[in-house]
Image 1: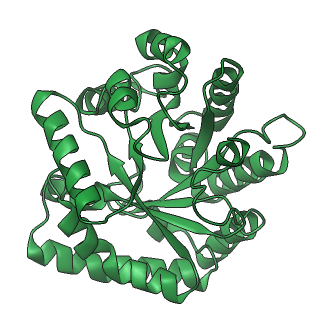
Image 2 (image 1 turned 60 degrees about the vertical axis):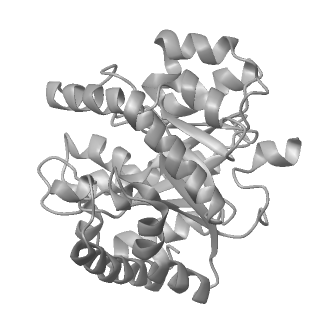
Length: 314
């Protein structure tokens, strides 16, 4: 139990880099076949560079129809040998949203995702971890459910920082409080959620320094702040749909090589922490990918991942 508690993906060596790929790249109606088409060139490049491809983080859609769709593609993935290591659940409501636009966006997205009780009941022990954003785990009916649920009903809950100046601090506090209640809980640091929050009152260079310092402080203070028992992971979005207000195009394209090297220097001190590459698309590609879109995405993914490898992030 202790070994599992310290690691998000315990079936792989704890001191080696593990890469997880998000299925958000395939759109809402993308099947495991599309996941594989989109990501296979990336998987080949990662393996060639000595990285361990651990599996997929799947998006858990909710509602009567979409809940059945989530179950269908999960079972299909399992049948076809695609390893789903995690499922991304609700983002939380409008608590702590920095502005009205973000509040509405968060609420709409939350309503589309699988409710936390269903996420835990249906998938809690079928994947390595299930994930929700901090507001979902910190208050309201979901919090009450997590406090009172059978603690053996899930392997690990990951709490992800939302777009808030103290997003990761709140995520860690939430994870710590749930651990004290006996619920195995970790924290997920989304690089661009942090950057987005810091960009609200500063330019990109200053915001990036704050994000880097935040991540470095988290990793450097695990032991002294009693976070040594909390598993950690890092979300690194690379898609066009992972936007930051006021920033044209994908945020990853705004980072210089020096910025990526600063990120790499921190991550490589803790190589056992998994990196999850998210890859949300824009426009109609959020729903479904045509063959032309798949081919374009394969090429773009290869370019982005090659740059991340070159700068030693991966």
